[in-house]
Length: 418
Image 1 (cartoon, helix red, strand yellow):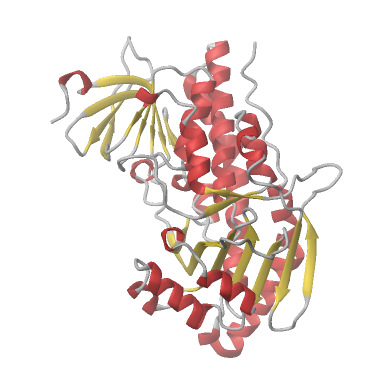
Image 2 (cartoon, one colour):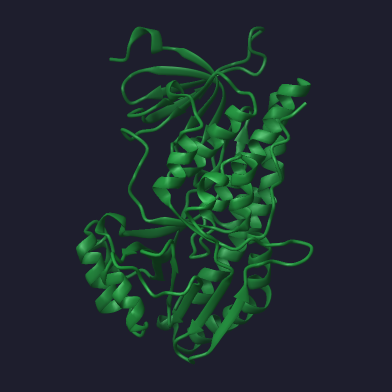
């Protein structure tokens, strides 16, 4: 049973989920002036598993807005060149990650996931994070004279009860908060992604560039994190047999080497074979449809969502972490405006959702087309080939330039002064 002083505790804001989205939202809100804040997470500490995340300009700008980019800048150098090689035709396209005059880019950085989580967590007071606390259910209580907007009652798996004015769900793809809001269930993309971090004690000879490979339904990439580590991934059509190996890193590596990396350069395969098994993960990609984001209602009163709970993106665009960091800055900016000007807090939440909805829905559309363009469609014969050909044409001509614009987006600063 929970201690008596925690039963029915009240907070201004509760954030559920201590992943990148949750820690970023809690940090941004703390910087914006929220003091009675609690971050709940079902695990027993900040997670140290996982390989790395790619931080494009949009994610890095968000870290700068949070005042945290300098803590990672020297450890993780930026790379400014992206190459994509079609292994079926042998053609290679190059793209500079420096943006345009109107929307400059600052490259991409490969950051250890645990390092990013640690930097975010260090910004929060120690007593503001409560681990081993899984949200089971929630209930919106009626408004009263003391609380015109009402409270939300949270029931945790240990039997404790928490009440909060504002609830931010950052609890991932299978979000309890998103389900309560009535958002559509994440759909199956029929695609999976394998990721890992290769380690070379004597150093590697990979150039400091993001190298992508496309082969049939496979889309892989590798990029140095530093002189001794290389982040890699392969996205592919899901095979029913995949479920047998997804929880076993050694079997995952064997599957990648024997089937998924077929046709890939030997150098890439060697990197996979040098992976730290603790960083290897196989993820079945789910997504929320663009129309689900356009038509859904991602807030109700003072309850909303961020990160994958809001906009799970089923593709190898590697923008999930960046979009979560954007969410945090923009949410905190609107909440800070409420704190300074004493406008309605409900208006602040509505403004956040209004600003984010179109951007994340458009990215979901680009992601949706990316999935279609890289899916094999072999079961449909000639029709499948035609669908894939058309999707690839649209993707390369229309979607790729817009994804580049998305990566160079600047969410600006928190504007918490004055």
